[in-house]
Length: 356
Image (cartoon, rainbow, N blue to C red; front, side, top):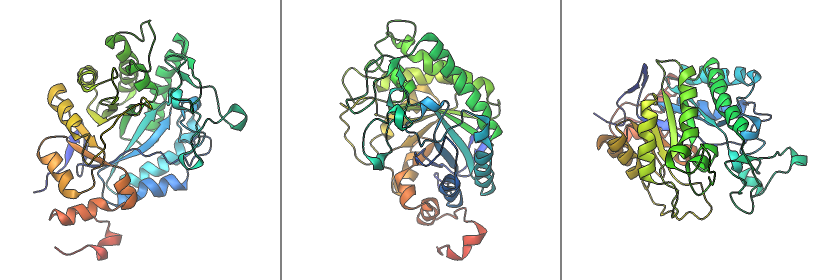
């Protein structure tokens, strides 16, 4: 019996296997609207056998987009196309999830293939915000320090976006508190120099993430799960670290968060990461063990045997793949063959299934 292809249940939601699609920005929206690109992109992962399909970072406010081309859910008009996508994903036997996000000081930037740089207001850019007025780097926009009213607006925006996500047919909500975006900015002392109730001590720096998680959990149905993505470490001296992540994960669990999606980095351009296969798995293992809640492992996981071992050894409950799925959207079906189990092949593709 394969551990990777065993079902996994969070609240009343059961995934057909432990393979998830990690959120991957496509920078292919207009005014936040999903397009046929998103339908084919996410739908292909569902037909390819993944158990959980998580949308890209979906902005809860227009100024929360990484670029002007990001997916959004800040208005009701965004819902119908998203519903078309979730209907298709569910029809293939996968569970649709949405990552709710705000980019903070890393907003209003160009798409990756357009080169680094700020998108100015005259080119559909906007004034970005953050915990303080320090930019991510010289090639990023100068943020305005958020006021109490700004913070309250963001918390409410996450809650309102979660309501829309439910209307759009999403079954799992993920709060993005990683990769140097707004919530992570408040968490890290390297990006948060405030000396009020939202900065300074660890308790104060965790406050915004906890308030957002509380607001999302309050509007999300009791029988459906909420996930939070964290960067376990900033990979920089004096920054957010794995001990902080364990502490925050315990607090999130007490609020009703069901799983921690454990990534790392993205907060500072000065980060020093020893990138190698499975390099983030130890963080997922530690959060799972010390915070006593399920975790998802992510980062340079490419081989079926690696993913199988992660789940079998109890390092994580889910394995999320990104670039490997871009290379091969049917990776789960190939993994099933290699591990000697029957994969969730669509009837239309059965003629292509390899014999064991």
